Length: 169
Image 1: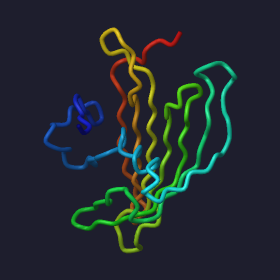
Image 2: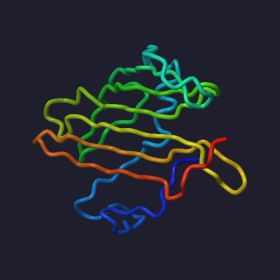
Image 3: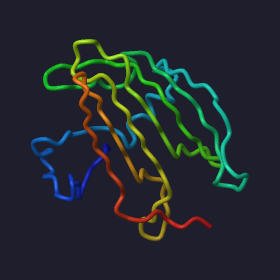
Image 4: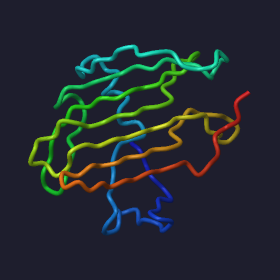
């Protein structure tokens, strides 16, 4: 099962589900797309421990890992109009202690071909406990993507969950 998006808006105006209106960038991926590409050993991703974070209370501490992938690793290609490219990826993941849940991802798609219209893509995803019915589930609660274009312009898309995160005990 893939991701779905509902109640999407741009500048406070609803976006039709068949695609973004003129002038808005569309997006695929983000919420769960990077899990396999970062953690599957077959993908050629390099993971390196960076540091611990937190205040020592359970749920408020974790580990930060840096990652990098080669171009044409397991990530899908980037598309710009009819062109496509396979950039390298680098960034950090935050893993919560205890439990081992990935709660944050900062990623950059880099080393695009010189003639490609995009020079870099930066993405941030945050996960938290969200109450669904009577249960709390670890789900993505925010997503932010910035595309830096070869001509010096930038485009941005962001998404946040409309439901407040579940209360932690």
